[in-house]
Amino acid sequence: MAERNSRPDLPPPTEQRPIARLAHGLERVLFNPGVHWVRDPRSRVYNFPHELEMLPKVTDFAFERIEGFVPSSRDTDLWALARREDRRFAGSTSSVTGMLSHIYFLLSDDRAVDISTLSIPFRNEPRSFTPGQRLPVSVRFNHDNGVYAIDSGDKGSFSADKNILTWMGTLLEKYFTSEPELFAAFRRGNPSSEETQDPRREAYRYSKSDKYVMRSQLDGVDPRLPGTGVFDIKTRACQAIRMDILNFEENSGFLLRSLHGLSESFEREYYDLIRSAFLKYGFQARIGNMDGIFCAYHNIERVFGFQYIPLSDMDDRIYGSTAAADRAFAKCIQMLGIISDEIVSCYPGQSVNCMFETYEDSRKLQIFVEPVVEWEGNPEEKPIAMLEVTSCSYLGEFAVRGHRAVEEVDQPWTIHWSISHVHSSPVKIRGALEAVKARQERVLSLPVGIDHASLEAWWNSLNFSGKPPAEGVSSVKPTMNMFGPPNGGVEELRALARAGRIDSQRLLEEERGKPVHVLGRGTFVPASEGASQLEEDTRGATEPMPEDTPISDASVVIESALDVDASHKEAANEESQVNSSAALPNSVENAESVDVLSMDVWMPKVV
Image (cartoon, rainbow, N blue to C red; front, side, top):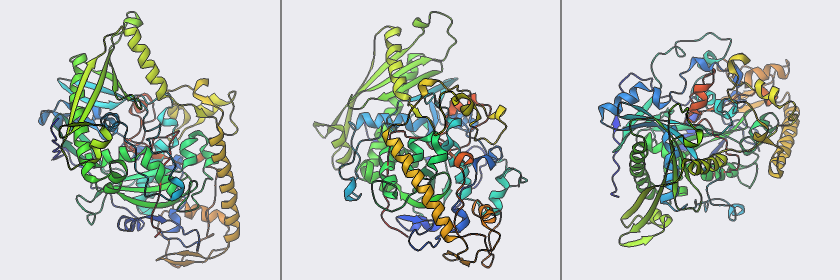
């Protein structure tokens, strides 16, 4: 396999909005490595406007005033570019990165990540990718006149519209890139503005490879950054929220208390990011020609801090160097084109559903292919095909394991690959597919106060869209096998969240009536109205607060997380968007995905 990787930009066929810029003084995070606390825990001085700390409620955000996520198959610009550039396939980062991840697992022989920069307590922690990162990936190749647009498929029975993090990313992306008076136009109950009525499309980058035209959403830009100056915006929920997603009300008390340490620290979150997200983030950044990611760490109620992570840092953790990352990405893109050709050859001229999985230590990528047809015959005879992809790496003339081929960039890397069709009965192949689908599922922990008797009513009331329940109801019905009691690890995180809530309330009382110090803005003396006015101010004032304006409290009012907001970007489940009457937000291919068994993080420098 030759090492070719030219992905030139393609001018978009239609006019786009300008790429957003960070607001609230957050741009200084881009140029100062390490973690930036919103509020320094030792001095209690705010490093950013104090009203930024407490996050808006998701049900108060008018998602219908922003452009929703557009699947590849509905993107007329993407179809037009694929035809103009004579490319057979087209996809967005949300539909392509999952396939690329499993191709990388195959080519790299499950190469471990590098956590050597973390503190000593992490030295014996796992260095493998998390189970959530390795979940099987489903996609649909939508056919039209010889061209295929790839959409993300089902991601298990947990509907994206019930995932509070699916909504959090979109809301926070707008929150961090809008001044208060502009963000107010996206709040329910407030009139819309010209900003919310802009008919132009969101900013995308389109690029091409040998076989693909690819689309990447562009979240933010600062021309002072290297290269294009473009970066991705990621909102990262803390460990307790991610691993116990339905118990978000209680878990929103979870705190990040320190820079370093195995728990309740930015370092823990960074460790989890390495294992569960950096591979995907790196693919997205390369497809979008981005410099890095701007990451906001939060617990759904409040944001703890920010960090800018350059692509080169992610490269070091996953591949060992940027040179190794560039080469591995080129190999993965080339293999994706080869595999895609083989997939569509199974049922020529038809749309097909596919499932990808490189099972850990199996050294093979399995792909299941089913035509999208109405089948009225015997279910056991419904057409299905199974492909197995294997590879062998060579450095020069010598066969080596994939993980060594990835990192040793001083020698040419050649890959010998094979794709075989598994000849077996549809019944046996479908049985193998069901086993893979079972690994795509995860058991959700029942939240506090909810049992099996009250589950269905609670599930149906879970609505983050801000629309009436009849419009926001999920198309996925809860079943008992989706849920289970919390395990020991989840119980421990819940205990930490409860302790964090108590500590936050104690601090609130201790600081009531004391001055609030905001770096670069001055000192604010609390008024006598009490905490109710502070709640309004800290949850997103509609206009900037003058230097001499008193506020009602220096601390944050801790509210029930039940009506807390959430979202994330393109990662929103596309199928759920199609099936649900409440359109999902435009959260990166990745509405923030919940990694049930994942962990990540570390932050070197405090600013």
